[in-house]
Each structure stands twice: as structure tokens, then as C-alpha cells.
Amino acid sequence: MPNYDAIIIGAGQSGPALARRLVAAGRKVAIIERKLFGGTCVNTGCTPTKTLAASAYVAHVARRAGDYGVRIEGSVEVDMKAVKARKDAVVAVFHDGLERSLKTLQGCTVYEGHGRFVAEKKVAVNGSELAADQIFINVGARAAVPPIPGLDRVPYLTNSSMLDVDLAPPHLLILGGSYVGLEFAQIYRRFGSEVTVIEFGPRLISREDQDVSLAIADFLKEEGIDVRLNSKTIGVEGEGNSIAAKIESAGRVSLISGTHMLVATGRRPNTDDLGLDRAGIATDARGYIVVDDQLRTNVSGIWAMGDCNGRGAFTHTSWNDFEIVAANLLDNDRRRVSDRITAYALYTDPPLGRVGMTETEVRKTGKPALISTMAMKDVTRAYERGETKGFMKILVDRDSKQILGASFLGLEGDEVIHCVLDIMYAKAPYTVIERAMHIHPTVSEFIPTMMDRLKPLQ
Image 1 (cartoon, rainbow, N blue to C red):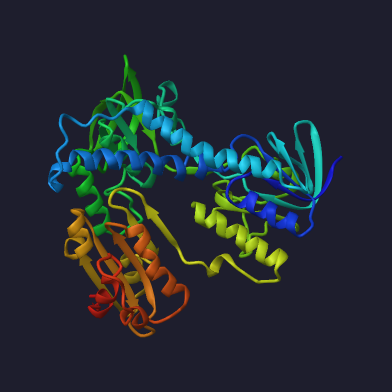
Image 2 (cartoon, rainbow, N blue to C red):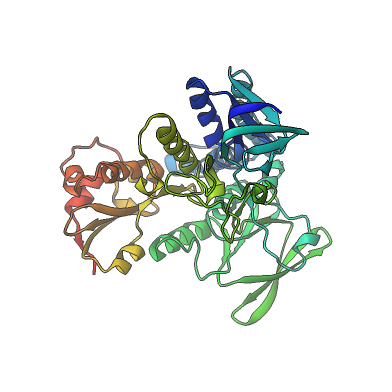
């Protein structure tokens, strides 16, 4: 039985980085990957979808070329096979590079297969049993498929299988009006598909403030996306070459037919076939591995990182998990999950950059707060670019002057949000950025202006 100092199960964002740190510290490491080096981000998440979004953006701007005084003769055509080939090539660079780097890493042995616990500190893979005093789980998550009657009898798509499509579906039905669903909705609408988004709740992306949800719905509808809210999918059925969703809304049942269906109703952790019970590793009711503030499981010497621990569902939280584990284990630097500030983005066009608390969450605290908003149409850079949809919103604690949160829905909102995030990490008062001199013309230059215009949150 091969013995190692450390075993890492999964080569997503956390695992490979930790393998390099452990090897550099003189540890003998085994890393196990059953399918895709790089995990969700590289293969079925960030990299491929943002590459598709880039192609969709070019098509969108080309159609608007006349607004900028540029003439394009004839219609704008999208070659979906070429779009997919470009996406595949971009993914291959990251996937292949990561696989190659791990397989040539001295002190690290790569096992390609499905790893399962057979005992507390023992993992089986490809008929072999590996043992180590320290084991790190980095197995990620996958699309959750809801128990809708008839869904198992139609060829539905998920975020993963959608990436194998090399055409623009004539009519794409999307179940779920949250982050994954909305990004795909806009991408494929810009590729030329008719798109219908079916959302059970009263508004899109319900975790966001209502003004954010409404603004996103407005610009998606402007592009011709059919948004159905308060619509519960109670059944799915095939209709020849079409797929129909049976929808219940306001007490009435109707059918919405399309040619393809994307299920984007959430994620579930890849923990159901790991033999966690053989190692005594605790999970919660949804299957996420329970961890403490330093990502340790209930079993000494076993950690869980990335999407499978339920402490974040993003590439950047997975990477930060690696940093926390490495700091505590190798650097004698006590870092904790609770020290990080919630931050993420929705990559529609325009994007939404989010950090900290929403306005709704601030109101629930009952604490005195200040707020400032600015429409993107009042931002010079956005006006010059002809991309004026959206707005920016910042919330501040009135007494401590600490920034509580921000929502930047607009041009470069996913980048500009970091101006606020860094001030929050520094625990500096908002007056620091209020007095900063930013470069003109940028979107960021209006953050000091917004800080100067803070008003009591009514």
C-alpha cells in the first residue's frame, strides 16, 4: 500500500495549488482526479462561459455598430461551430497546462480515477489503496436536477452539457432565473436563439436587492428574452422535436414549447460517492462536508476545500480555501473563513459586481446607515461607451463609517467593485476613498463622488 504524507482528492482550484505548496515543503503528495483537471471553473464554469460571453458580446456590438458611426454591410452572422472551437481551444490551454504541470511536479504522484475512502486515513483508487496522515477533499459540485415529472424522459441540458452544443438553439427554455441561467440566456439570445427564462420566484436572482433584480430583468427583456416569473414548472414532456414545460402560474396551467431545455436550478456537492461514511466524515442535510473556520472536518487530519464544503460556490472562494489551509498548516499563520468578505459577480452585460451586505440585509440589522446611488447614465465613461444601463449603490455604517456593502450593476462593475472591497478589508472608513483622487475618465472615479453624496437610509 503506497503511503504518502498527503492525499488530495480532486484537482479543482484548491487541490493543485495546495499540492505545489506541500511538495515545496518537502511532503510526498498524491493527487487524485477522476475526470477533468481544473474542475468546474476551467472546464464547465468560468473559462468556457466567459469565452462564450466574449463572442456573444462581439456579435451584440457588431449589431449596434451603426450607433457608433460604423457601417457593417449585410447582417451579422454567428458561426457557432467556430465559436465552440474557440471556446474549446481556450479551455484546452488551461486544462492541458494544469494537467501537464501536475504530472511533471516532482514529489507529486497523479492518479486518474475515482477516489473513495475505505477507512479514516485510507483512499482507494483504480484498485490501489493509498494511505496518508493528511487528506484534503476538493471534489467540487455539479448541477442539481429537480424532481420534475417527465424531465428524465427528455434530453435536457445542464451547464456542463450546454457547452457541447455547437448551434444556436432555435428556442432555448431555461429553468431557473439565477446566475447560471441568466448568463446563458443572454449569451444564446445574442447568438440568435429565442430564449425563455422560467423562474419559480417573484423575481430574478432573489438574493439580490429588488432594484437590482428589476434592472437586470429590464435589460434582458430589452434584448428580447422572455422572462416568466412566478412560474412553477410542474411537468416536462416531449413534443416531436420539441420540449414543452408545463407551467403553473397564478392558478393557471399552460405549456411553453422550445427546441432545447437548460436546467439551471442550483448545484449539489460531489460527495455522494466518496465513501465519507467509511471515514466518519460528517455532512449536512444537503450533502456538503461540514468544516470549521479553518476548513477542518470533524475527523482530525482531513480537510474539505472548494464547493463541496458549502462555504462558498466560486472559484475565488475555493482558491481562498487553499490559502487558508496552507497558511494554517505550513506558515503558522492563523487564517479563517470568517475573515473573508462576501464578493462575487454576475457576468451578464452589463455585469453585476457585489460585495458585503445588500440593502435588504442592512435594513434588517436596524442599524443607522447611509446610502448613495448613481445611475450609469451619469457616469462619463459609460456615456462615452454607449453602455449606460444599470446603477451603482454603496451602503455605509453611519456611526463607524465602515462600508457595509455595494452593488455595482453596470459597465465594468465586476472590476470597479474591488475599489470598495479593498477598503473593506483594510477596515478603513469610507472617508479614505472619498478623499482619493481617481483617474478620469473611468467608472471608478465616481466612487469618491458617491461617498460625498451619502444620505441616511430611510
